[in-house]
Every structure is written in structure tokens, then in C-alpha cells.
Image (cartoon, rainbow, N blue to C red; front, side, top):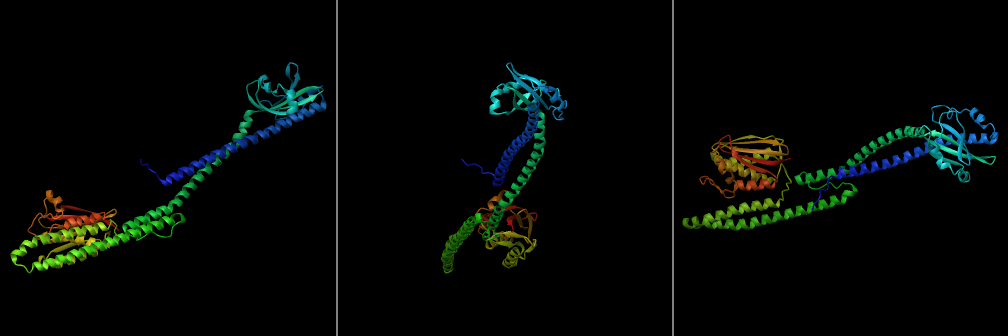
Length: 456
């Protein structure tokens, strides 16, 4: 089962932007963690400095009068009300930890916050400074540091705490500018990736245009100056084009040889017919003419198929049509036909010159046979197309019979000499060149034939 491969550009953009976004998210989370560690480290430094100062004061002044001495040391960070920063001293007693001194603020730790510190005796030896998270009696979350002090055979615990909001606030103050910077970086990298992908795929778009030029006949092969990654592909394509051209040339030579091999004996037969009497000539003339018509029809078709639909020539429309008209004027000189021609001098079509002459020549010859006195040739351009309109002022063709006119060998009237293959051959050749033919009733009274060619 086939699956749509999608756009290569969209795929590269999707992967590039997706991986960039993932990398930015990972880096952002890492930077956020680093910022949080940095902020917590800064606050831990303040808390440790306070617990160290209080511990030194306890050691220097002893227990007696410690309440008065500690309260007399004012610290605007830890002793100002409603700031959320505070310190507290606990003494280990048989019943647990009892608070006997604290800062002048109204904040104290809730008893449940001391549960992780019950084994302070063991902590004294393993880790005299220990961080922990707790709550106050008012329900505020705090980040605290505890320091154990041994004095006169007793163990004291000095705790300094900071509001958790201070930690988060400082973290967010740093996270927001970093996040904005990461977002701008993401937009910048997205723009850079988009530009990189577009520039990187530019050689592919140029190669696409070159292939279209080769297909339409503007160029014979692809440009050899390509990026290293495309050089081998372009080389293979040029070899394929050359191989196809060789096959086309061989097919054309075979068709030419076949035409020569059959036309020469046929011409000899026609000459021998002239030596026969009238009765014998009449009996053989009809099958010989039929052979000639079929031969021309199928040789034209074989030559057109050998083209493989690839035109190499860009024909200036006006000179090509005028050359055909000049030939037909001489061929139908006794008719004194009047040609009205309106063609833009700049118009060009893509078609092999010999096929163009046969397409337009057959249609114009048919118009000359049926016209009463005038033939009009006009053109108009559509996007990528050129329409050549040929009209005559003859008796025309009934609408119901228009389709039959394009059948090989079909003749609607035997009065005018012809074999019925002209329009059929024109249709086959123009379709080989990605064009079309359409028959209508002309405003002049006769037949209107519209030939559509690819524009150059």
C-alpha cells in the first residue's frame, strides 16, 4: 500500500523546530534548576551566618542571661515584624525540644516542623548544620537551617528561617527574564532553521526548473554545476536524457527508412499503372490510392509516437503560418482565396517544426478546399497556451457530424478531392505535443478549427 511521503521541506522544518524546542525545554529546565540552587544557596548563606553568630554568642556569653543578650542584638532582616525571617533557639530536654529564646518577630516554628530534628544528638556528630522545610504556627511555609551547639553538657539547637515565598520570589525574578530570553532564542532559531531549510532546498527547486526546461524543449540537458550531493544525480539524469535522445534518433531513422522503402516501390507501381489501358488502370488505381493513404497516415503516426511527447523547438508562430499560407496560395491560385491573418509577432509555440507544418498545413489545406473565398487566421493566448483559430466561409459541417470529421479516412462529401486523413493526422500530432484540436461552426458560415499549442 502506497503512502504519501509529504513535503521534504515540511519534514525538515518539523524535525528541526521540534528538536530545537526539545533542546530549549531541556536547557530551560536545567537553567531553572541551577537558578533555584543558586538562590537557595544565597539564602542558606544568610541563614547560616545568622545561626553561626547566635552560636558564637551562646558559646561566648554562656547560658546565663542569654535571653536578654540575644534580644539586644537587633538584625533588621530577622527581627523586623511581618517580614517572615526569624530565628529560634531550642534546648534539648528529656521531654523533647523546648524553645527558650527567639527573635523579636511574631513568627515561631510549629511543633510538627521539629519532627525531623528529634534525633539532634546523632545530628551533632554527623551533620552539625542541616536544612529542612517547615511551617510556622500561622501556617506559613519556611525554609530553615539548624545548627547544633553543645554547651555545659547540654545540646542546643539554633534555627534560622526564611519564608518560602522569598525563595520562590527570587527564583521567579530570575526565571522570567531567562524564560523570555529562551523564548526569543527559540523564535530566532526557528527563523534560522526555516531560512536554512529554504536555502538548502533551493538547488532542488532549481533542478526542478531545469528538468521542466528540458521537458519543454527550452534546454537540451541539465546544468552540470550542481552541489556535490546532487552532482551524481544530475549526471545520471543527463545520461538518461542522452540515451532517450539516441533512441529517438534511431526511431526516426527507422521511420525514414521504412518510408523510403515503401514509398519507392509504390511510386514504381503508380508509374506502371500509367502504361496500362483505361479499364485496367481504373481497377488498380483505387487500391493503390488506399495503400498510399494508409501509408502516409501510419507513417505520420509512427513518427509522432517516436517523439515521445517531447518537443525540442520553439517556433515563432507568425513566420511559420505565413510560410504555409504562401505555399497554399500557389497551390490554390485558381481559387483566388483571400487570407485574413492576425497573429502577434512575439507569440511562440513549442512543437517540432515539421509536425507544426503538417498540423497547420492540413487544417489550412482543408479550409482552402471548402472555402468559398475567404479564410481567417487569428490567435489568442491563455496562461501557458496559444490558440490558433482557422475559419473558412464554406458550407460548414453539421454539428452532429463534427466528431466524425476527425476519424481517419472519414469523408462527409466526395465532391471535393481528398482522402479524409488530413484532420485526423493533425489531431494525432497535436495531441502528441500536449495540445488539442476542436471543431466548431464558424461565424463566417463554414468550419472553425481551434488548435491549442503549449506556449513558449
